[in-house]
Structure formats: structure tokens, C-alpha cells
Length: 301
Image (tube, rainbow, N blue to C red; front, top):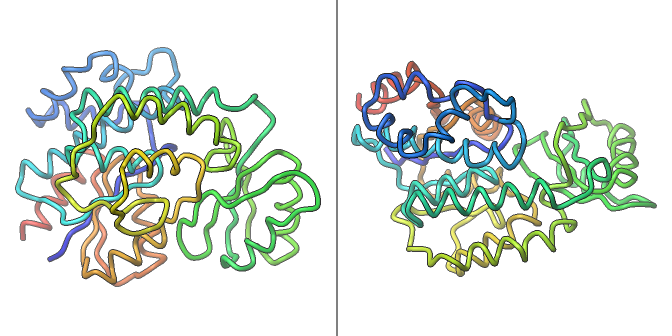
């Protein structure tokens, strides 16, 4: 078996995530208890802020890290790790690129930078269902405004990003090109677009406070959908304003012999993407205690 861990991105967060694992897995309790404010955000969210970018990102990283460490403690270790946008940081943290304190500081700053990068209500994102890349790239060419591709998630699901005028025009183009569905996303701005170039420079100042280690697991990066030999801080500076090549990442992993995937984090979105790419490859998920135990049992067998 050649295994890859896939770390969930922002949007998968949910109040109560990780609580049953915390209650039943001593290692999880030990890790969460080092960060009581984040622990309480994950479990209780008394101020109802977990869906805000600046809070969602560190909460997701901590939870995904705990889930992956619970697998690792049971002898289940991947050869490769990758994640969707924010999930890339979870993959890097799990791979000891930084210690957890530093990873949480970096991702907290990233969330704050992204949340405040653009004036509210001026930019947006939308999911395009049922068109291939060529059609989507044709559709983002608009007469006014700015529209770009944010995420290549899987065949038939691509996310576009840009200012309101550009995305609105592109959404109409996609419908005319035969999209099955066009859905505006509930996000605070045009993430993974050129509008975040200034934000990427602010993020770089944060990243450069830390010296990343060589990850102990092989990382597949969003900016290219493959392994990279470049400086990690260069890659992460670029990632925040570039397209996420998640489909390419999965295809690269399969081409390099990966025959089993585990999605780490709340939800099953990445599992769905993998199935759209190759239905034959087993893909498990760890989102709660039940799925953790099922995944451990299946992979140990």
C-alpha cells in the first residue's frame, strides 16, 4: 500500500469538530489542551465566529493536525501529504516543517491577512459545475472586470475568482457555455487571485520569521500539483494568489503509485474529488471518532 494524506481546506470547519476524538484519544486531548482558546473555538464557538477566515484557519489546522497525529500514533503514516489551500499548511505542519506553535502563528496571521485583504462586497468567487478546463478558461475572458481560476478541484468542478463585475459576467458566460450549475460561494473575497498580491507580500514577512525544516513526508504543492524543490516560503507566498491545482495533485500521486488516500479533517469534499478523478482508488476519511476508528481498522487490516 502506498498512502497519501489529503488535508481539508477552509469551508469544512464546523462547530464541535474534534470533540469526540478529544474525549476518547489521550494524544488528542494533550494537543488540544495546549491551546485552550482554539480548543474552545473548535468545540463551543460561543461567539459564532468559526466561519470567519481569521478564526477558521487556525481551528482547521489544529483539528486536522490532531486527526493526522491520531493516525500516526496507530502506525499509519503516509508517503505523501497534500492539502487544499489552507490544508497545505496542515500537511506541512503534520510533516514537521514547523513546530505546531509556529505553524499556528503563521496560519493565524494568514487568516487575518486574507480576511482583511479586500474591501467587503467588492470581490467574489463561484463554483462552476459541469465544464472542462478549456471551457472555463474561455468563460473567464470577460469584457469588463477581472476573473481568474482559483481552484481546479476535479473534473467538472472548477472555482473562479475576481471582482464582482468580472465574476458576474463570467458566470453568465459559463451558463451559455453549458455549465450544469453555477454557484456563487459564501466567502469574504477573491481568494487565489491576483488581488491578493499585496497580501502575499505581507504573508511573506510572517513566513520569513521562521526557518522551515525539510518536511518528513513528501509534499505535493498547490501551485503546480507536484513536488517542488524550491524554497517553501517562495511557494507559500505564491500559493495565496495563484490557482490551486488539486486535481493535478491527485493525478500526480496516482501516477507515482499512490493506491490509497485518507482525507483528514471535517467533511468529505476531498474524498468526493478523488472519486471524480478515479473511482477505483480507495479513499477513507477521518472527520470524527467513528471514521477514525474505521480508517485505522481498514488500513491495519
